[in-house]
Structure formats: structure tokens, C-alpha cells
Image (cartoon, rainbow, N blue to C red; front, side, top):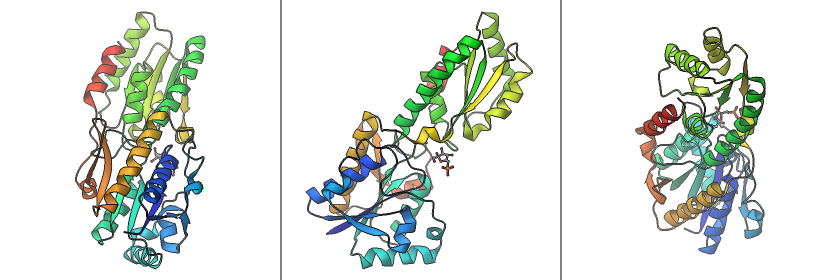
Length: 320
Ligand code: F6P
């Protein structure tokens, strides 16, 4: 293999730039040319492709977002779109591809693999919803952004003796809510993986108020419903009526990646190149027990990211 490509796709995530840098530099270090594909799969179809040198990826390890831009591409979901993409790859002489993105982007990787094009996926999404990896790139940074925001909200919640219901991202996955809720001592964490029993939630909240609690933090994963609806469900039935809702939104996707995400991105990017060059493709890179490993990308079709019941139980125990 003499030429490989790299693209970012789906929602951006802090650490994507560090992963691009790792792919480019690990490739050049091993003697191959590396091409950046701009605007995700869209750029693959239109041929928005440029050779990247060592200095093209200088000064980006610390930057959020993605220098390759990203997009969600409907055309790539069609057979014609994918056929055009493969033609473009061949036109540029690109023989292997690294896709950095979330589950939608990985589905693109699955399709390319099924069409016989050597592809490796790097899980880049704040949602932490990819199977077979303990963490996705960007999750740790987003988590820290959320924690910083909740800490600030807590100051005003304490001062006004109010309840705050805070909605965080994550699509169908409750990990951002679960981890931030535990790290921030939230009284209640509402996630899509668990059925919500509002009678039990209200009982717990009222119990807290009876023993002197003057404010509450409730974290809701967007996949479990809107924080405004949760507020309606709870407000009338508890003894603390002053409630505010904060939807954190896209602030969670930006910012300089944490050290954890930068190191993870560097390790995953380098591993992706190593695999492509040894002739292994159709894999997704993962971190398991702090080891960088590779799984069959087709696992995405049959496996799910597991919900961490132990953390959920621990959060409950510690928020009595
Ligand atoms: O997948 C990342 C994510 O930020 C989700 O958590 C969220 O639901 C979605 O993307 C938002 O997408 P968009 O940026 O297109 O509004």
C-alpha cells in the first residue's frame, strides 16, 4: 500500500484532529502518502481530496473540531454514491481508508468493507455508543465540559435553593448522563437504557428535601426525553417547586481535547495505519482495559455498547 486516505464524518468530536495528525504522521513515518478527504463521505463522492504533509497537521493536536470538516451524507447511503466514492478513491490511487466518526460513519465503513475496499474505523463521537470499545474519542472531553457546566449550575442552584434539570447529549446512549451525574453527585440520573419510575424518583427527591436538601441536580440524557418534560413530571409532585431547565446543547461538542482524548487519538490513529499497512482491514479500533485492539467492523451490525449497571447502581447509592 502506497497511498491511504483519512476522513472525519458525522458529529465532530474533540480528539478528531489529534487522530488525523496521528494517521498522517504515522503513515508518512512508515513511507506512505496520506490523503485528507474533506467534508466526510461527501468529499469522497465529489473528489474533494488533498495530499497532506507533516506540517499540514502541525498545531492541531490541541484543537477541537476537525480540520477535514465533517458532514452527514445521504448520497453515500445509495449504491450509486458508494460506487462513485470507490471510483474517486481509485482515481487518486488510494488503497486504504481510515474513517473517524460515530456509528453512522462506521456504517459507511461497513459498506466499503462489504464492497471489498480496505477500511479501518476509529470511533470518534462524544456519545460513547460504539460497541466493543470502552471509550470513544471525545467522550472524556465532553464529559469534562458537562461537569464544568454542572459545577457552575450547582453554585446558582445552591444560592437560590432551586432544582435544576440538565439535559445532556448522547443520542440513544446514556453514558454522558451517567458519568456526569455520578461525577457531579446528581440526585437523579435519567437515561434511555432504564425505564423511568417517576413515583420512585419523586419519593427519593422528597426524602432528600425532608432531611434538609435545599437544591437538586437532575441529569437527563437526551435519548430519555426532553428535560422540559421531565420538569413537568416532577414539578407538581415534589416539595421543591422552583425548578429551572438547562439544555447544554452543542457546547458539549467543542473545546480542546483532554489529555486522555489526545493520547487515545494518537494511539488509535497509529494503530489504524499499522493495520492497513500489514494488510488487515474491515476493522474498528477500540480501547479495552487500556489496550488498543481491533474488532471486526461488521460487529457494529450485531453488537451494542453495554450500559454500565454498576456505575448506575453506585450513583444511586451515593446520592441517597
Ligand atoms: O452524535 C453526536 C451528537 O452530538 C449527539 O449527541 C446529538 O444528538 C447529535 O450529535 C446532534 O446532531 P447535530 O449536530 O446534527 O444537531
